Length: 532
Image (cartoon, helix red, strand yellow):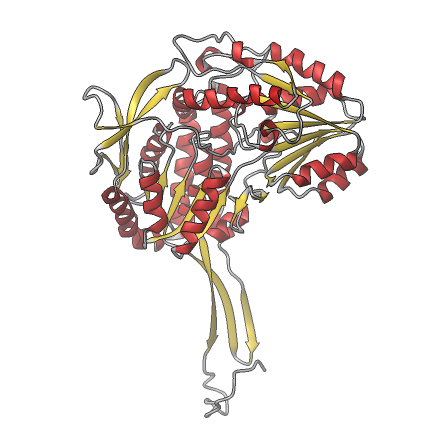
């Protein structure tokens, strides 16, 4: 079976980090082991870090390297470097800032395969999927290259007699980005191109599960001519996260992760006076109406359910079969799922491993959870024989049918290659199921009825909707974000909402005396100013 891909503009690009058991931290690490360091003030550094965590090759199960875990002093150092670089970068002209963005874009285009290989080695997704992640991230870089237009203010002449008013937007200052394991390049690129182009300086805290991509990006920024200190990488765990959330010199936090952590980030960050956008978890439904093309729907369900081993916040995890289409649709999905080749992402397989052994085991446990609740296990991925060496973290495509809505297999975000099929009698029942979920990230409907599709888009309480598109990830010039427990804060990622998040507005009211006027001064008047 061919690679699990969809057309470029439907490529899933966003996801949330799950609360899987963390790799064990240790003091130091083997002297011969490669260590992934911080990037502060234009140079790699271990700083004061004495702790490290293991970074695995998930296809083999072996420890590939170690990553340093920040101490509070390291947080202070990274923020100080960003604060020191801020005045110079903030005052750099838009023309020069965008020239650096364009240079970064060209370098990324030329060397994208390097970044994709790093992602596959540490995350496990197949190379074609990693390349798609980089490509969608590049779209945000290209969007940010238009920052001079996006930062234009307004001007009103003679708003009052001889009084002019104009508006402008200025950068926030030092901004923090906390990104998940499942898109180590794409998710940070939702934020930092816009933040940097707008004149901010950045401290990025990547996931400790796959930290090398962030360091590679830092070096690319330096090669593009970005001044040292504008882009910094702080490796670490909760110590680093809490340090950014509470640091008085950090103006904002951008986060993508699970709902419980997103809520914590939002509450902690705002309590410390920061602007926060915290994108949380998801349980994305795909509704299939009786008039849908079932072959198209089956292809879409497989691609969206099992691509990147289901480790996407936009993955379809709940397929809602309406009317009598369930039996035929399940049979078509099962046939396709059994043909998927699972293995090492560097071997042209269709689907790779999960990111850690603990996460693989947690995802696999939902098969028994669903069966105990009365679901039918149509395809059981626990017995997969992967095309890989060693003891990688593999779980094959898993298809569950007739899953009760009371089962944890339905109510919880699994974040793995487990697709649950639920059956309802009518369109109204399907909408009620979607709207009854506490999550509101993405949803799709498959139908040939334009009226039903239009009604669905209007009625569902979800932030991103696909019509015959299983992974409705918007282009960079639209915003990405969900509703309900899928978002804390009122700002989505990238697009014009991203520009507004990383800037603050000012309005300047100006009056100049007219020397030719018969009365140059208005005299004393203690009344509230009015426009006339």
